Amino acid sequence: MKKPFLQSVCLKLVYKCILRPVLKFYVGVQYTDCSFLKDEEQFVIIANHNSHLDTLSLLTSLPSEILWKVKPVAAEDYFGNTKLKAKLSRFFINALLINRQSKAKEGTNPALDKLLHAIDEGYSLILFPEGSRGEPEQMSKMKTGIARLLAQKPGLKYVPVFMTGMGTSLPKGGLVVLPYNATLHFGKPTLPESSDPHTIMEQIEGDFQTMIQQFGIKEDDDDD
Image 1 (tube, rainbow, N blue to C red):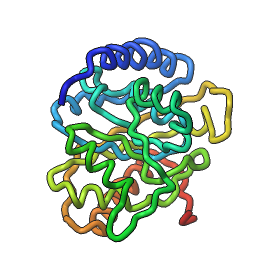
Image 2: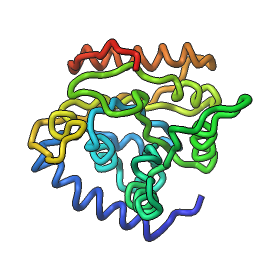
Image 3: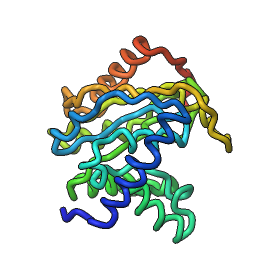
Image 4: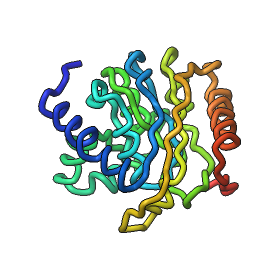
């Protein structure tokens, strides 16, 4: 996998030199150390999702050396609904755009296939298993796509990340970022203990249950 020089420099400038100080000193985002990710060949970050600040905060937290090879998975109908927007999202966010409307046919799953292809190319991913953004300080039921991805890639580690306060700073539908203490908590890179998607999902849910109990957030019992 060849390193894209121009994009790599741009990502470092935007996320480490510009956005990180803004998020830290204006919004109040508190970062925990995740330098250990430099030692991981490949991984999938799994995080809860309350705000558009989530992706920006995760990218600004990453070691600058690996920014270019970590792709946030994003909805194509939102971040790529025009050719210009798609191009900007791929370059400045390094986004992997997924069509949420595409449906599996005869054993195929276009969205999952696209994730698997990115992994095969050597990229790491950022995934929000809840799907769309939820209400501030609530966590919705996670979808099982992440478990099916990990089941097909033995040896691929996942990194649970639990974020608090993002949905208060910039809730869904909000237009103004409000200063508020928000925190990113990184878990350890973890290998699934099974190749069964159902068991993998239980393991991931257990990790987040531990984080919920430790850091405190309300859960949403709805299945949507």
